[in-house]
Length: 569
Image (cartoon, rainbow, N blue to C red):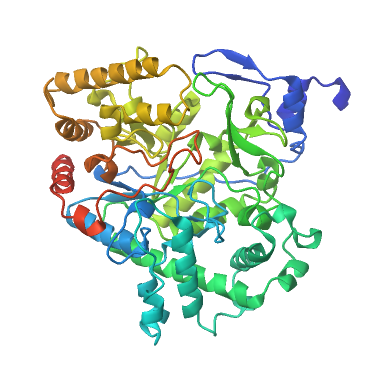
C-alpha cells in the first residue's frame, strides 16, 4: 500500500506521532493535521524493529527514610566563592548524615556552556553527560594546595552579593583555574571519545560562540576538521576541569556513604539545542525539534521549553547506547536519580522549527526500552530512581512506576481531591518521595503570606485580575489550615512559623517512602527559587539561602525538623 493511500493517522502512527491527546479534564483535542505533518517530517518511518533492550529485575523496594532538597548554588559558606560548591555539598551531606538523614536531593549539576555570560538555569544544560565546573572548590584542588601563588588566587575571590552572580563567580573561578591548570594535562589521544568531544566543543565555543549551529560549516560536526581547529591547550584545560569535577563530586558522594540512599541527582528533561550534547550526539538528537507542553488551562499558549531531545527512531537504532552512557555516568557518583518530567519516557510534546507551542504534537518513545535501560543502570549502581510525575500524566505512567518500584512525586500543594481540598496524609501514595513544595512552586512561607501572588502581580505576569488571585490564594491557605487543624497539628491561631512546622509534621504521617524538607521552607524564605514563565523579571536560580552553611546547620529550626523527621523514620 502506498503512502498516498494511507490515512494520516496510519502514517503518523508509523512514526510514533499522535493525532490527538486528552486534557486533564478528559477532553479529547484533535491536533491540526498540518502540525502532525510538520512533526512527522522530523522523524523517519519506524520500519525496523528497535534494538532489543531487557526491561528486567523492577527496582528493590526503597527503604523508608528522609532527607533534604538542596539547591546547591544557593548554599553559601565561608569557603565557597559566592555559589555553593562540591565541598559545600560534602559538608552538608556529612551534617545531614549525623542527624539521621538518608538522602540529599540536589538540583541538576549538568554542564552549562562555561562562557560569559553563564546560563543560570540548571534545567537548560549544554550537556547532561558532564558537570558544571562552576561547582569546583578552588582550595580543594591539588594544584592549589601545592601552588606558590595561593595569595594571588585568593585575591580573585569575588565579593559577596545579595543575589547569586553567576557571571562574576565564573569569571573569578575561571581566572583562578587557568592560573592553576598544570602544563602536563593528559594527552588528548588518551581520553574517552565523549570527553574529547565535550572538551572540543567547549574550546570551539570559546572562539565561535555557544551555538554550534552558527559555526563555520566544517566545524558543525565532531570530526577531524573540528579536532584540528580546536586549540589543544584549551581542550586539555576543559578535560582537566572535568577530571577535577569528577574527583570532588566523588568526595561529596563518599561523604554521604553512610546514608540509606545518599546524594540524589536530578536529570533535566532535555538539552540546549545549540550546546555540547546536541553537537556531539547529533546522530541521536531530534534535529530542529524543541520540547514543551500543549495548551492547558494554566498556559493557554502552551509551553516551549526551548530544549532538544532524543530522536526515538535513531536512539533505538543505536541500541540506546547514548542514553545508557548518560545514566551510567550520573550513577557513578550518585545514590539515586530524580528524572524530571518522567512522562517523557513515554511521550514528549514536540514543537517544529519556527512554530509556537500550540503547533506541536506528541511523539511516542518505547517506554519498555527507556525504562529498561534506566532500571538496569540503577540496579548496576545500587541506586534509587524517582520520577517527577506531577501535573497531568497518563495513568500508565503512574501505574508503571508503581510496578517497577520507581518512586513518584507527592507535593503538598498538589495533593488534593477533585474539589480542590487537600487530602489527608494517610491517603498520600506510598510509592513516592514527599515534600511540601518544589523549586517551581511557592515556598511554605511564600504560600502562607501570598508572596507568589504579590510577586507575579508586581512584574505583570498574572493571567487574571489580582483580586481573583488573592482570593484564590486565601482560599488555598484556608483549605490547608482546615487540614492541619483536622489533623490536630495546628489551630486557627497558629503563627506562620508554627504552620511551617505543622506542614512538616503532616509529611511524617504519610506512607511515602522518602520525606524531604527544603531549607528554603524551614528557614522561612518567602521567595521561590524559580518562577516559571519569567526570565529577567524575576531572579530565577539566583536566590541564595538566607543563612550560610555554617549558620543553617546550627539553626534550631533545621535541627527541629531533622529531629521531627528522624522520629518518624
